[in-house]
Image (cartoon, rainbow, N blue to C red; front, side):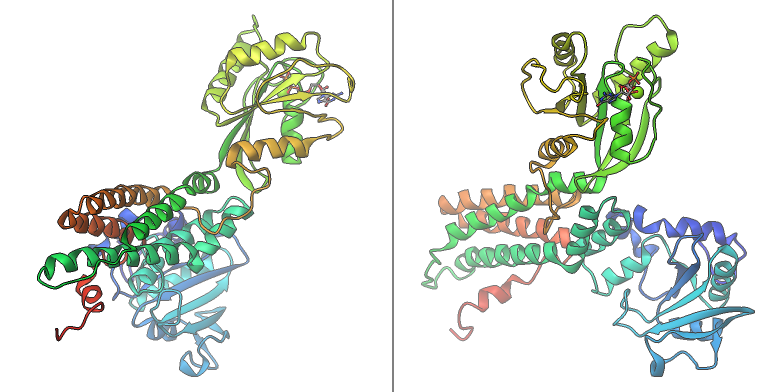
Length: 477
Ligand SMILES: Nc1nc2c(ncn2[C@@H]2O[C@H](COP(=O)(O)OP(=O)(O)OP(=O)(O)O)[C@@H](O)[C@H]2O)c(=O)[nH]1
Ligand SMILES: [Mg+2]
């Protein structure tokens, strides 16, 4: 690990560090007792290398002292000018500095940010000076970990920070922003509290068997509502995965159907070569884009046909592999082709995943009667950019069950989904136990359900349920 004053190639470390939020995950955070803590002074670049400005962030109990040793200006950094940008110098380089007093900072610690000239040299100098003043290099995700450890963010919000940085589309960005603001955390906390209250209800009957306690008759309905809420959150998993990871779409079909033309149109750039010669595309052509607000990994393929050309054969082999790996296939059919029926049959034989049948070149044959195709089918002209909206509607419908997706309030990730599934099972178990009047078994099931939900946000998984019990009747009794 980097320690104060050591002589490592800082810019390389700095670059590695700017990737940190993307790579950070909860396992690292759970493991960090020995690595990440809340008392070291830590420093790292907060911006990527290559921009006009490099920001070095310093966080920790002595951040202000470090800032004062590293940066010098006409005014001194301190409470009097908290949150104000001050112009000064780091060694010979001019730099801006700002002090944010904890706990009202991103990490919850005292924070100093140094805004240096862009490029690795100025940032390296500032970072080295911070190390000499007693900082160590922050671990990946450590500022956000501090925010979590200091109660500024819960785990769901910390994950949303990583999602925000990675967001590949506006929709992905907006849902991450909402979750950072707490849309998901609030629902989970509410669910956690409700499960804990229900458990208290069960356990009060066990702990005080002699008391003539009235059962809260709403318990079964409240259990059912908790199960529904868990299901509702779980139902956002698919959209969450699509927004976070993107969706694999392949453009396939016979040679000359217009596949590469469609790729270029969707990307808005001439990415693939287009000619009137069948067999133009030999290799797969891949590009990332956004369709209907969803991040998409798009692959154009070599047209499928029997060929004696060994290069084309290899291309066709790659096409087949890409099709097999896709989630959605735009299968292009030549509406002006010689035998549309045969093209449809071939498409059906290939059975591509998530297939949308796309009749292309309808500009050439506007009135031609085309064979019936089952499943989503559209008629487009890439040349005239006709009906592309219809194709995108069909795509979004297939991808996320709505033609015009909007940013959802919440979209859970795989970790949350796994814990929600666990909680859902436990809530169902509790309902059955409750119905069978096995209260001594309903309580533990509810405890496990609440623990699973609590693990999502990272809150204490063993809350003091006595509070709930005694809040419901007089302790003097
Ligand atoms: N009239 C008309 N021509 C089109 C349309 N779409 C593509 N073309 C033409 O069809 C020819 C083949 O287009 P490509 O995009 O190269 O077709 P491809 O499916 O990628 O072909 P391969 O790479 O050989 O498999 C080109 O001359 C395009 O200009 C369309 O909607 N209407
Ligand atoms: Mg092509």
